[in-house]
Image 1 (cartoon, rainbow, N blue to C red):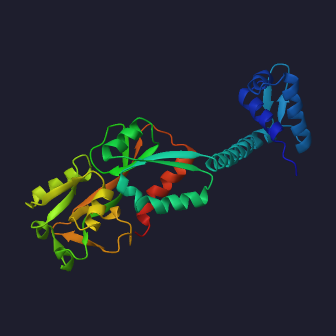
Image 2: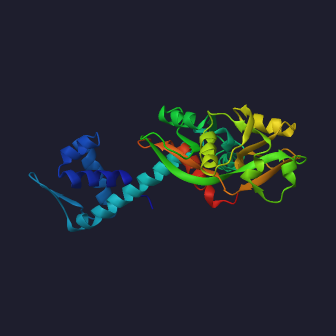
Image 3: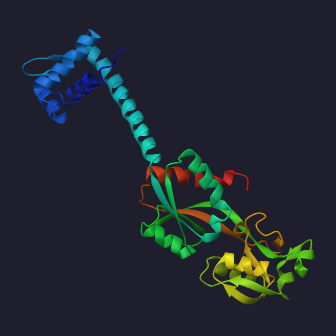
Length: 298
């Protein structure tokens, strides 16, 4: 069965405008052209859809009944074609995102793997910045969306909560604290620690929590990157307090990761976009996967 979509398009245009001339102009056709399209459709269906006189154009009873079906037919066709087109774009698209560096260690890799398996031809660019840098990259349209630490953000940004990431103690297995079965923040006070610098979004969050609980730590070494802190810990320089997601499992065989209690301190990770932004099809697919991450088992 051959569906005359060209004739259906002409019929809808005439019915909605009430004029062959107006309908022809809207479809960039001559009046003879649109008349021929309608006649072909009516011949195909074997019914009269439109009655035309020298002064007026009116739908027949069959035409009135057919009009909503015709509109739905073309609407569904347009929607299907749009999905196919967007799917084609996804397979050849690119997306740029921004994130705090620790997100790229354990949080992001499994999402990227799933995305790449579904859209193997897409290109992904990841800008790893400080929390403030992530917000700036999204605001300046350098990245379509970002993953950063929860907190106060620019009014033009929309944040969606993702997960809570607890702070943990990272030390070598020969460190005195490694022998403890339960670890409190106060247990850290006698020992020299490696801390992340003031430019990190983690630092003010930790400082505030420790001040509220009257805990004073010996931060003798300050670094700017978690990777540097891990290197120093691995060589026995000291222990470090880091976000739990900052460590790859089994990456350092002689390092222990210990949960800190009394209190439990965590940072929230949020997904940010510009409020007025319309993500590209490639970015939309990745955004949905990131947003669904909390439903997955960590």
